Image 1 (cartoon, helix red, strand yellow):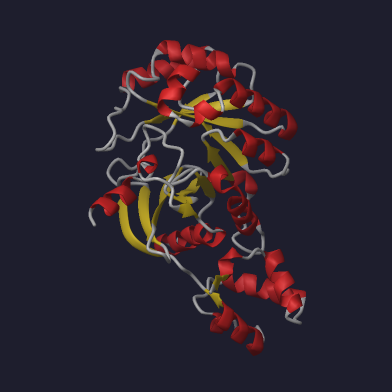
Image 2 (cartoon, one colour):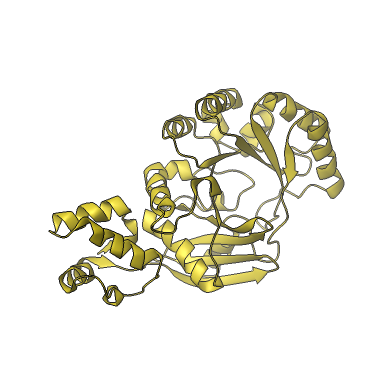
Length: 341
């Protein structure tokens, strides 16, 4: 049975017209799904009985369930079970600017970044748009709040599930639905160059973030296999084209790993690499996991790295630390659950 949350408003409009109904009926259905948050088609009191019967016979409402939840101050992590018993995660974070949610786009990940828990458990499949939509709906219902900012960062590489991710963004961006503004949505990629180029042609106002984590090919080759396919020079060149074409700023995410990429010389090299670009760097203290040998940089080293970038004229922030008590490292809760079987 098809999932109704895979349908954009225009998809629903085409469907109801094909069935002989009016275009506005699609708006009614969308309103019940995303504004009134029904859990049964039978609750749609202003929709014709025959159309409700068709929806009941052809579509399902919801396919994921929360099976684990961990909470700490300003953060909560959720583990979801999917229709085929696969597991994915999402992390809610309360920032001073709003309620942020980081969702999964794949079951597992094939990018195999050495420091990432998700990469230990290989990609099983892509998530459907509905399975991404439902992560938002389920968490909003659980926490009794509205998500104001969304990050597509993990589990998974969003640009390795490009078509489904773009469809998902269209669904949640629709004002008659969730209405999440494009400028409050961030796609994070480890650097899938062809998809960055494709994305730059879509004229979307969605933010682009790059998981860089190294200032040169030597270090990046060791910790991020994607760099062997698309070297830093090609990635940076593509991003300069993206900035010129879209006039949008790019965020560079940089996880600081002790004695790997956190030296002052690395900071200077990073500053030279990004000099002149419309960008900023988000320094991320590492969430250590039991399976991976990398260690979190010391506070003094993080400060030195930050100060060096500042002195070199780079816009830089240090991300607030979340979730060390809730297994918030990408893929960590799923990994623990899989091992407990």
